[in-house]
Length: 631
Image (cartoon, rainbow, N blue to C red; front, side, top):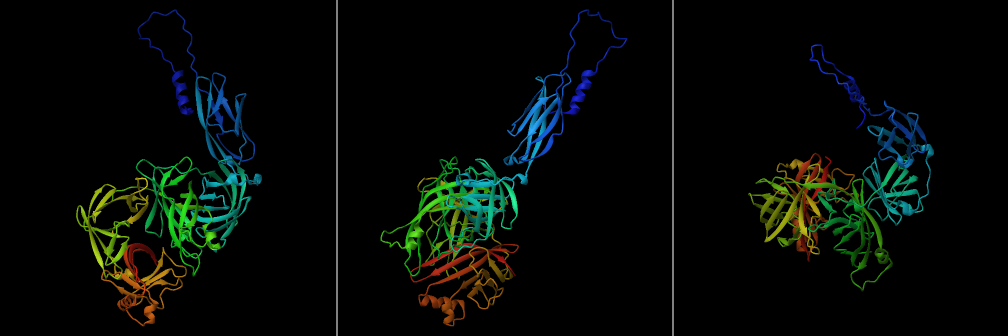
């Protein structure tokens, strides 16, 4: 037990107190036999200073005093005693010596005990190891010593080194891609994460290795402002968790789901990516030169290896203009989960492109595009848990109830997406699908069974199962449960935000200048809506547009928008005339409709419906887009 002075004092008082009978007590016959006296053993104690500060790379000596009332021979023990802490016992003193290194920097607490062989007393010994910049070294390190992922123990810092002289830096939750010289870490060039073409170095940093071991580095990191800060980096191990993770986003209305605990009934799933040609840009700002894929398969948490059921995906790209588009297959040769670094899942892949057709002429540009690539993708993750949200009769909710796997036509248009559904009864509901411009619509009745966090929906003769999950902040997402055709196991890969649609939206809510939070275009990241003038893409230096798209305000207050230079050249003046004209001449055109679903302070979520018409294609899509209202 740990020593308590109060308890010891009470013990001494009790054992030292005696008593005798008074004169009125009955007499007794004396016992002439002699018994040996009972000797009470007391526990030994330590005294002195039990909290010390010690600088790394120095020798520090301090003393604790021992005391034992009976004068017994004493012994000392320290639980989990580190190699840099030693002691000797001489003349009723414990002489301790601390010789820590830089890798020992931390606040340590050890239990030190003193024993006489019968009783013992324990104390907390606090040894705080401090930095010592005067003794910093500049160690040489080989690539094999720093490859992999490292994370700051007490700082918002993580760094991952790839084997192709590139890596990922996470500093205060900000992601950067970097390039470095494998023979030295004295220069690390930081670039925008996700940018690989025509990217300019944002800043130059460096890492000085002060101390090292196989699983720990103590470094001096020089940030972009020139400040130097010491960081203790621990080697990150492959990720292991039975939780489902979602990728949070401030601008998107859906989340990619990752799961890394393969079982007999459930597959694992993660995100991977592959570069696009230099003349392509993704709508995903965090992966501007990449296209992303969801990989489903099995995961080995001991090695970090991910074995995808489907390793190849088809993409067609026009490598250069005016060349014809080429059909490619991208194949992942290896996938490895490096680990979780500062709340980001880091995945290393090797992949390559190959033309689908053998008669493609391999130009120098195509050859460069097809070269084997090694990539690091890092994306934020937070755990989500099952939740049982209310579905009230008469209320309309968001959630992709209509699966993209369902073949549906609306007014002759191939439909995909799905945003809203309305609960009409205890087991019934409807999903209303409308083309942009509201010229065509269809209502899909469905039946449902809700069992806690699970929702089973039947319509069009098909049955789909959904799961409701909740972020730690209470935000609910709705995810379609699918079955992988290769493994026969279930998997959830995407969660769409689920909430009740706001029925109290006014015309004034629509009017104003908005900033695109997702799907933004460089220099054209604003949208303007009003009863007189509307522009879907507006220059970032304007608050009011100089010209207008063709538009109309629908009965539900939403805006249908048509952008066409062809109509302006024809001097057409309204939405209906422009749409009819483009259809009559067989000219391809895109109509959009934007309807407010939810507003949170200055953040507005719109239902976004697009309708594309050409001589050979008629397609419509429903999704959501988020905007920040500026005025």
